[in-house]
Each structure stands twice: as structure tokens, then as C-alpha cells.
Length: 298
Image (cartoon, rainbow, N blue to C red; front, side, top):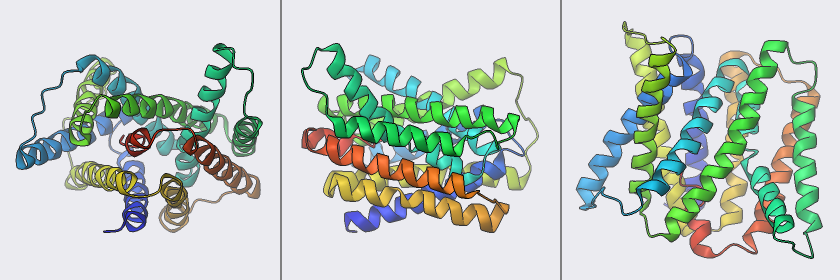
């Protein structure tokens, strides 16, 4: 399948996963959903690794640990945000990761004493955060504000996780192994947080179990499709098509949850999408191809 079609399909599956997560929050805590989502991913990646004759032993366990720690925390905050915000809003805040990465690049240039900071990157970052202001304006209820801040923080942590995935790709780690250890981290962290918070649900309904299975299958399939798309197609084209996930989420939100978004929220979402695309285009000019291919293997 061509890379653009893979990315469109992956974006649709991620939006569909968001629907299942939002429905599942009525039965389970965010940590439980993360755990079961990881469990499905562990099983699928182990089966794929066995089918391809790939060893899951890794020479860089510390790198996988830090990648999993940031990625799982980002996922947990994102699932928490999905439970309390309109689906498209939660999706958009998580997609702030591209803007956060641009901010990291600017901060790194300043710390290294670079004589020149790209003004276009600065403008993209400012546009992205202006979009956040429009989305999280005081019209949100107080309890929604906490979910909004969690979604914003999930995007920052996701950016950190993507940078760590880039380092793993440079170290020669295959995507199946990266996703396997990320999923394993989700199982362990989700189980630990659920145990500490006494949020275990020992009685499962058929519908609840179906939603958990759907979350894991949709997320794992979308991850592999997105990884393949970034490995074979144009980074900028893929990044552009990835934002279709927000459109799909908006349609789902209106059709399934009767979400109603204000014009200011829609304007903020547009600003974040524009900022993310601009930041990706500028980063694409200075990022090695091997790094680009592994950037979104989360």
C-alpha cells in the first residue's frame, strides 16, 4: 500500500481508537486502559517478531526504559484528557508534539550558544501556543481545564518520546522491538498505577472487554502502518496527512458524542495544525533521513 494511503488509514484507526478509549473510560481508569492496550501490543509484537525471526533481546535496555517511561506517561495523560474533553480537542492537544519539538530545537540552539535561531521556528511555536490559548480559554469548565492541561502535557512528553525513538532508530533498533518494549512499559506502569490507586476493576462486562481489545488492536495496527508510511514516504506529506486524525476525531465527536466546539476552539485547532506543519517542514530540512523514518514509531 502506498505511504499516503497507509498514513490516512493510520490516522483513521487512531481516531477510532480515541472513540474506544472515551467509551472505555466509563468502565475503566486511564491506567487500566493503558495496561490492557499495552498487553495487546506485547502479544502482537511478540507474534510478529517470532514470525519474522527477530530476537526481542536488546543491547540498549536503558534507552528503551527512558523511551517507554516518557511514552507511557504521555499516553496515560492523553487517555485521561480524552475522558474529559471533546475528542477532537484531546487529539489536537496531543498533536502539539511537533510544536514542542520545535521549542526543544530552539532551546538547544540557545543553550549551545548558536548565533542564529530560526525565526520561522519561533513563529511556529508562538502560533501553536496561541492556538492552545484559544482552545483552553476560560469558557472551559474547571474540571475540563485539568483535562486540557493533561492533554497539553501529553503532547510535550510525546515529543520527548519521539526524540528518544529517533535515537533508538540510529542505534539500529527495529520498530517491532521498539513498539514491544513500549507496550511492555505500558503493561507494567498501568498495573503499578492501578494498584497504587486501587482502581482495579475485577468484574468485566462483555462490552468493556471488547472496548479494551479494540483499543489495543487499533493502536498496534495504526502504529505499524504509520511506521511503514514514515519509512517509505515523504515526511512532510505524512505529517500533513496525519492531521486528518483531528478531522476524523471531530466527525466522530459530533456523530457519536454530540460534541459541540466553539469557533474559538476550531480556530485554535487550525492554528495548532498550521504550526505543526510549519515546524515539521522546517525540521525536515535539517533532520537526517534515518531519523525522519523513525520519528513517529511510538
